[in-house]
Length: 138
Image (cartoon, rainbow, N blue to C red):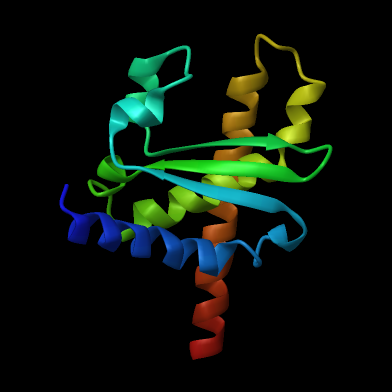
């Protein structure tokens, strides 16, 4: 990936971070955004590195202190449409918002349950934005 392409992808990601970070009420969170230009570096520290190489982003949060980070695999992001990048950013921000839910869930089902909740909320937020824009245009 050239420097020019890398910077282009960073601008795509940042566009959706700017759109959604405050919209989702994340202003009171400290969120670090990390960008990786090599998939192996992105996957470091993951138990399942093959899974980590297949995803475009992952998040971590310590909800007790409202600290979080989202890491992006820039080469993987480059393969996504703008709509997919937007959905990915919202998805990871919602993971941060619901992170405390997993603390009380059954460990065997926690990840599956969180994925269902996060995906559902992501679709709801994206739908609400589109409806709001349509209403303003009417």
